[in-house]
Amino acid sequence: MGYSGCDSMENRIDNLDRISALPDEILHHILSFVSLKQAVRTSVLSKSWKETWHTCPILVLENHTHRDIARVKEVLKFMEQTLLNRHMEMISLRKLMISLSWFWDDKVAALVDRCVCFAIGSNVKELKLRFPLLWGRYNLPQIVFCAKSINVLELDHCTLSRPRIGVQLSLRKLCLVGVYVDDQMIENLFARCPLIEYLTIESSKGFKSLELFSLRKLHEVEISSNAELKKVEINALNVHSVTITNMETCVINVACCKNLKCLVLSDLSITDDWLCNVISDFSLLQFLSIIYCHKLRSLKISGPSLKELVIIGCDLVEVKLETPNLSIFRFHGHPISFTSNAMALSETDLYIYGYDDDIQVDIQVLVKYIELLAKFNQCSEVLNLEHCTGAVVIVPREWRQILHPPLCGVKHLNLLIDDDLFDFTIPQLVDSLLWLSPHIETISMSFPLGHRHEYSFQFLYKEQLIHKGENPSCCQSLPISCWQNCLKGVKIEHTATYFARPASVDRFSLERKTSEKRTYEERFYFHDNIWDELNNLHLNLRNKFSYLFDGDK
Image: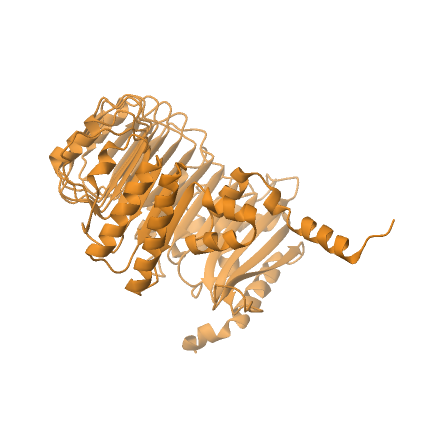
């Protein structure tokens, strides 16, 4: 049967416009990812798209770059009319977000007020108001405090004044960033919001005390950088995660959070005794992070359920762990005395300060470093080391005859170097790492040199690892023969990451990229003259970036 040209065209249009046939829920979800302007434009595509826009339950206005105040007011007036129409037609609203970074006057505030009121009239469930470049300039309308439909409230740089009527909210999530709220208002707020599950208070002022009592549904709390806050007390039995950061003068009491599983403490004036007493009560704690708490000296942590421990930037001299189920340990700091009964670490990260500030490392420093590494010999299969220059991992050959390799039990060793690899070669690093951890399965090293380079080495060994008969001089300090006598081959992968101009520019794209991330890879397998091949590998890399070494001449 033949088809006319008109029928064929209609069929093609129907095939191309399958998106319009999708359920409204999916179309609304699609519109939630585009800007207000783009969402409005879809209304001219067809009648179905016009209806989709008209009933879309999510309205988002974000204006972070437009500096024309007249244009900002025009858009807000359009938003106001849209919300009024929905209110009059009883179309419910799931989410309203207004985010403005530029221009603020009484007329703009009045427009935002009316948008908020109409949204509440449409039973909005999520209300997000963000004004990040302002400080206390937008007074939240009183009607918000009695809007029972709102279960998510996020406010950025607003002022919360005491309501003339009682607070009546059903909040499940509350996020306050840069707000101004006094003690009486914040006490009243939490007393009337017993259903809160997620709470964030950041960089806010006006209140000195935060007491969270009788919040049975509270699960997660994040309190950060509230400069005037002097006291935080959390008494919520079901809270699972607490994060408190950057409040050095604040007194903290979280001892009643018996079911806590995640605790993050950063930039606080907590003491050894405080931490020891608190942690001992948290039998369910699985994740603990302690960052830049400079009053801590001797850390004693006991936790039967603890699986991951992070310690960064604290002025510690001693760490004692009674954490039999610890799996991941991350430590950045000065050398410490370390003891642990964790025998099944899957991964350890170490960044020891002050060891490689100089190219030449003092022997006493080297010995202390090796003694610290030896603590993780039998309890961690994967060890990640980070250093500025990598100097401390270069163990001089004369000292290898005296010292004992500290990492005979480690299977995978990863080295991250922050500075350009000017002072050492790839063969030097590989040779020393193979002494630190004889017969290791894999080594990876990452360093900048023009680009960011990552070398991964997989080692293949001869079947006989124990050297029989007279040991060569290079093996005298080893219980097993060194890599030069038992290495059969090595597989190497080299990945370089760099930025370059885009290969092509899409003139229809809204984004104008000046550069894009690129990578290149190469692979090698050496089984003969491995040391010479590694030297050639480094020489080729240095020649490629020879301009970086011009100052050496």
